Image 1 (spheres, rainbow, N blue to C red):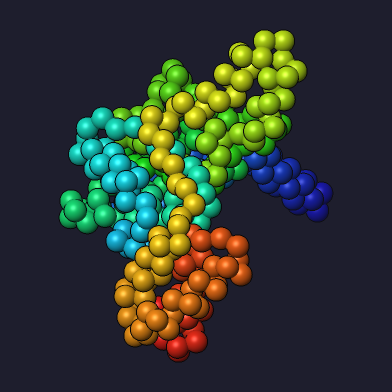
Image 2 (cartoon, rainbow, N blue to C red):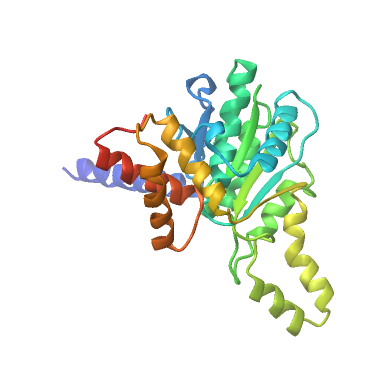
Length: 290
């Protein structure tokens, strides 16, 4: 009887030991099935990539009033897909103007042009930026090219994780892999709050050096694409494009005043506001969006 109790006690201790080892030693990241999808989401714990079967994106042709930045990002992405030199890109500016939509649309358009899915899109969440080195090591030797995409990237006053991002983008001992490019969107041009930069300027022993440290992160992005608030004509062009794309058979003289009122009640004009109006209009007309 005692031997059975001793054996049960030993098994319990071994189970506890195995659990402790499992907590201390991180699981090895699994190599994903790259052929299962052309878009993935990075999950830092345990370090895997989850395939996204259907990406939430809009057609490139529907991104109105951003033709210049659209063409610049398309050219940069096309060169990267072809194995030519290309820059990390920071898409910054007014909210709702299609920054993240443009990244996802450009990725799909380039793959469609090339009639392949060799260009992969990997989304990393803002709070997981510190795990970037693990992601880089997973994809460094993969036979594909990768856009690592972070939406709404910004840093708060006490957040120092931007330093690890700087090292990954440029300056680290390994450097950015040749098959990786980094695209980020932000409402801030320098990714850091203005009061943080101003505080450094006013309190630091060497204000110039302190500010340089804070704004040097955005310098790691060779391509800066600015998105600005749209005019009324641009806004109506967006609505017009959505109406045609979704086959909402309604004369412009009927939807135009409603679209303007919709924007007025929200205090802004943007691609997001235009699409929200289209959702409301399609719902009232009893028509699904294609």
